[in-house]
Length: 444
Image 1 (tube, helix red, strand yellow):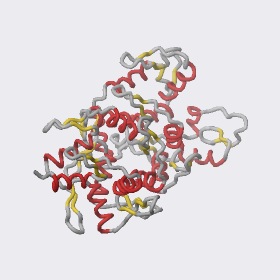
Image 2 (image 1 turned 135 degrees about the horizontal axis):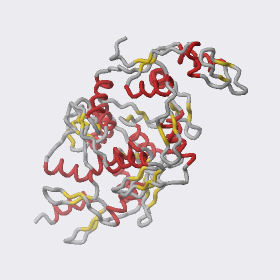
Image 3 (image 1 turned 30 degrees about the horizontal axis):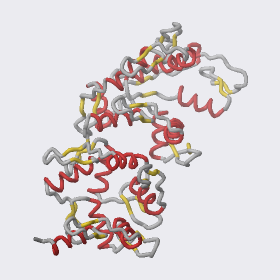
């Protein structure tokens, strides 16, 4: 056999079954005739026999092959508990033992965040992940980063070259086929009916979404996350300002791969796969569809500002409103004119419009150009589609833009005139009327 192929070809026979012998427990009447393992169900015994004894095992990584050989074909116990000297075959079994047997002892404390751990290895892992996030090895094909060269090479070989020198032909492959290609999602959340391909994904969903678990705090801004990858992504994009994912069509960069894919799908492919079932408006992303439904059709604004009673769709927008409007915070300064903004998006729009003079969004029907994509979409919807989705609940007059509806309600039904001429003190309901007045009456 070619030793470069990482395969385990040991087939257990009756002659060496003593090495794998397991005592048959009461109530388990189906026994494997090769290994003497007992099962409650006959189907479980058949599956065991077919997968364990009748198939050659291939593994994608050398470490997986070595672990298989140590745990299955040798009676080796290499993982010792540093608290009671008990030994275990697998590292996961050692961790389970420490959690159960030594759960009240937390002797290892992180000096940077004071978080406590049951053992030294977990503490070291925590430090590497949260306090030493160095990923200096960049994959030039997908911009993913790795902590060491070996991980990068493994990634290139298995992901981009499709090589599986240690590939498993059983459980991992079957799981992949069922969950990805056969759409076999048998694990349904009893709270929102979302389906998952495996129990662990369902558990993670319920823990983070429905139970609100956020066990991964950011040590720089105290924001918390339900999953470690989300924390790492946050630190990389927000605090380090990294944008590792570049669009190969327009050179635009993104901090997350999902944002890059969304950009390519909606901007370059023009896909709009999400349709509102109430007004048939289409959207490029599910988040925009949900936002549309909440604001337009449900008017679901449950977050109220305690200072001005203005309502918002979510807490993040409320907090941003309070910071910028009531606290007057403007944390984003333009480096070209020193003008400051309360939101980063407003700063970017300002730079693009004022200093760069860019109009990147052109209407494909009349060639009119816009500086912002939202303005282009509003133009297409109101001018070319003739849509008026915003109806006044006082007079049933309809408008194409929400801002026009609010302006109508404020001036017509509330009688408000918020714009005063500083020269003659005449008041107006609309800003454009004030500007017109200035130009015609006070033009000198």
